Amino acid sequence: MLDLCAVSNAALARVLRQLSDVARHACSLFQELESDIQLTHRRVWALQGKLGGVQRVLGTLDPKQEAV
Image 1 (cartoon, rainbow, N blue to C red):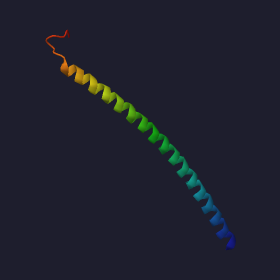
Image 2: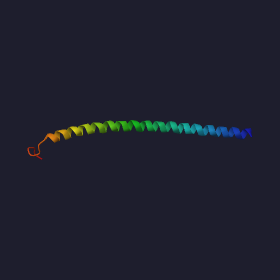
Image 3: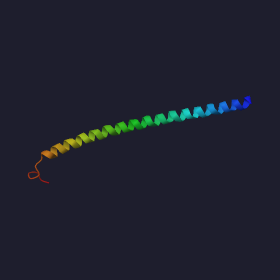
Image 4: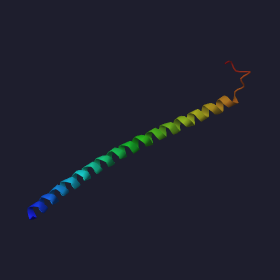
């Protein structure tokens, strides 16, 4: 009976170690994903600023005086 308990404990320890490795790997992936999303957000924010500037300039132009 003690041998069966020892085998069960060893199997449980291996499973917990594997789950820990999976959790660490998932954490790494999510950190990388978060970094990529933040970079994309900054790029989109910069593009929106540039588009806003273009829209302000276009709003001041008179279509009757400017060649289209």
